[in-house]
Image (cartoon, rainbow, N blue to C red):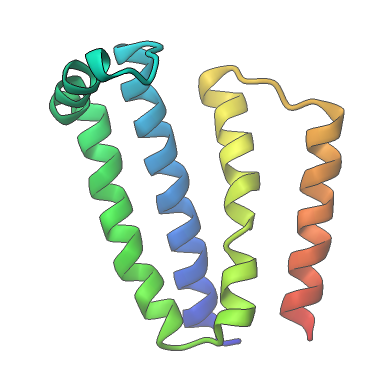
Length: 123
């Protein structure tokens, strides 16, 4: 795997992480809601008007284009497993920026992901 492909994978992962954080910021502002017909329109309007959610969606759109560049250069059976590194970057970013916990089972999961990505990338 070349340096360009690796850069594009990392860029896509980071864009997805930033998008997740923006979406979470938007949902923090909107608050918890239940899935009922009564909430469908009000929550949809709040989401559509939320700058954070709009930003998150825009960043996701950019990440789709970077991911398409990855797929044009790398086998999907190598590239897609590497995208699981996004679980790690999201967990770390949420820990530092949102104060979310990283428990021992999550740390073990992160290690398992790292081992899996290493094995996929190596072979």
